[in-house]
Image (tube, rainbow, N blue to C red; front, top):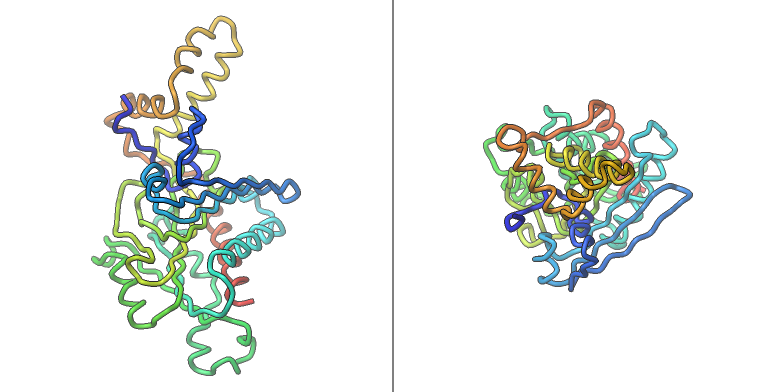
Length: 316
């Protein structure tokens, strides 16, 4: 039943979790986990080191850093500042030391709130390329700053062009040494919505989480390092039903009269349950994606948190 099963997620962490039911280990994939109890941040680093591991995970070879923090959904400026500092620390590990000319790309459609994370991040950045080109490092406040430029390329329906085509043209003309792309992602678990940040050095495939595959933006195509930062802002309908089923089975197992039914459902693994749900909700809901009702405030808050992390790294 699960031969064609594919988890709809942009998170490498969730792709790795699919193998944990049978305690399976994937050759070529290494996982590091760390919990900061004081800051309430759980960090998982997935290293995909071989092509075998990449094939098994359905993700390119590279490093995937996932920050999970329940407080990301709260309006706590001090806490979000701590998250910004964590983002900055991990970014420095991926890009190394030294000054760089950087192009930051805010992917997504600013007219669709769950997809407006990238454009909102760009709105909050400190842009310095034009100042440094005009005045050099003699301009006040730029002594320790990198040359930062940014673009919001929109989506194909707005421009008639592939996002990659726009970025390739800008890279060819401005010659940055590093590209950072920010995009909204899709998650496999509702508990990770707006509470998770993924940072990776493998680039990104815009729209892949919602089945709208566009050309990849990565080092192989652009010829320079590409860092991708994303936050899951949507889940599909099957995910919500699946999470509900998990809770239902757990409740059934605690009730003697319902244990038999709960036990039958409990014998299915995650992939089998998810595909069963997809079949049950077809054909009307299997293409539906859902986002929290407070997504407007959440995207605004998260975009500022991410932009502050970028400003810390590139603008001191």
